[in-house]
Image (cartoon, rainbow, N blue to C red):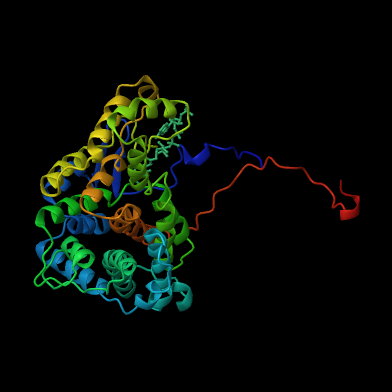
Amino acid sequence: EKGLRVQDKGFLNTAVMQSTITYIDGEAGVLHYRGYPIEQLAEKSSHLESAYLLIYGSLPTQPQYELFEREVLNHGVTHSDTAQFFRSFRYDAHPMSMLTSAFAMLGSYYSEANPSLQGQRLYTKGDAASLATMDRQIYRIIGKATTLAAMAYRIRQGREFVTPPTGLSYTASFLYQMDHIGEENYVPNPVLVKALDTLFLIHADHELNASCTTVLQTGSSLVDPYSAIAAGCASLYGPLHGGANEAVIRMLISIGKPENVPAFIEAVKRREKTLSGFGHRVYKTSDPRSFIVRKTADEVFKVTGQDQLLETAMALHDAAMKDEYFIKRRLAPNVDFWSGLIYRAMGFPLDFFPVLFAVPRVVGWLAHWRQMMLQEGGVKIWRPRQVYVGETKRDFVPVEDRV
Ligand code: SDX
């Protein structure tokens, strides 16, 4: 068609919408949630408080926060809707695959969420009833994210699912559901709760990354939010995206000792290997989150002891940062380079790391989904174009005449 041209492969530089949620400056290495610098939020806020900020646009008052926390926790801790479903997986199913499937299944369970079943544009009217329905889905998806993650973890250990006691924070409830194995009055280590909560907070949103775009692309057809979130999980699962935190540890294990780093760097330069945890489509100087993760790692290691891969990670980091090949391509550590070391030190299984990215990221996906549902002029289905460069018109050839 006339006038259509490929702007860039992989949306290298394409803006498809306006947003008021998250601001990134890739040159300055800046990240703001609703105008608040990520460094200030990481130090002074909590994941759930920042979740409220991302979704509703302002920091909550104390009553607003307490209602939000209570609704999220109450909507999240049930197992009856998914227990049988989790028992149907193979013993070695990847937890990201379980999480993706479980969210899709919830869309069939909570029919109120599925506008096509209602035969109406449920969320886009913006009236009190549809806003309340939307909020209920938001509470349930944030609450369920931790419960489904804990179920995926426990089912593989052959452990029963547990319900956290009231009075624990969102992240403490999650760690309780993960680690409680029957001890009386078990309370997760507060240093580890704080560290994980900070990691959740800095993973909560990152504007139109691949998985957020997937959620909006899917949600733009007005499917229920559970199905859109499941699509986001599927996109995040990939090693180029949220699967990178798992890939970094596998890379460090394959390198082994720090003295093997130079040989690995040369293999990367020969394009035989990828340096997972480095590079970013937007950040071309530094990923501000990587500094927060690095600092959090030191806090965690004080409790858990240092991970023996840290030496290798530091040697790899230092070698890459002063190597012309990486400097020329403006490759620096991203949020995934150090985070896996923390998850490993905290005892999470390696294939669980992308789940620890998805759990907080449902907040950012929901913030963007809600923004799209309520946008001025209603929802337009996302339907990009292409430039066709294939065969021109030709006639069918019967099989006996083909060569
Ligand atoms: C996340 O978008 C987001 O916001 C994502 C995220 C979020 O919060 O949602 O920040 C989370 O996904 C972080 C990224 C995690 N992924 C990894 O760590 C995987 C390793 N990184 C690369 O795969 C890559 O850097 C990407 C996918 C992150 C970015 O890819 P781009 O923007 O498409 O860059 P590119 O592939 O065009 O690379 C440009 C050059 C190329 O070299 P040349 O062909 O020009 O010679 O840099 C090279 C690439 O080969 N390169 C790397 C590299 N990353 C890019 N070379 C070695 N190791 C790397 N990690």
